[in-house]
Image (cartoon, rainbow, N blue to C red; front, side, top):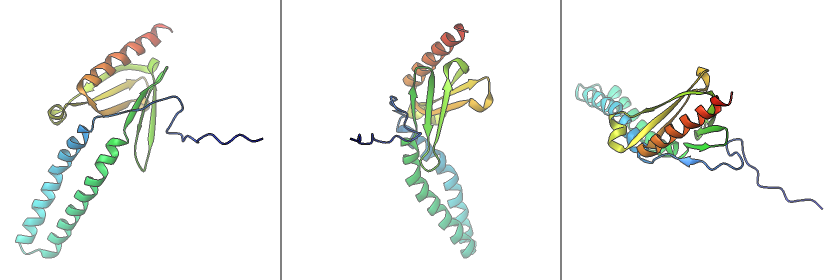
Length: 168
């Protein structure tokens, strides 16, 4: 008698871990961040059209509209794909829709934890937590955390990192 196959989990869904999402306010921050370059492209398109450069102006305008539509569709999906989980020995961060990535940072390898918040982030109540390790290739960042969660995570990671180093 054969057992039915258990549901298959991919490499981005480790068993026993629940990933927490980041704040959806990150969508607004990213929209506004992209609005500035899109507005500049729009002004360039209008200037070209006013100067009689209809072909160049139309190309720039079409590109701007297409890029804006693409970003309008893509950004919310990117933000929803960001998640993190606190495992027993590691912090795990996953990102990406088409090109997925998962970063595993052992608590004992963390040297320090930064919390960063720019003006736009502050306006929408989100922060970025940056993890620094001995090896630059294992540094990781997590954008879009609510301010209180960023502070909690910073304190928790620092505590866990110090506990792992004390055991050496």
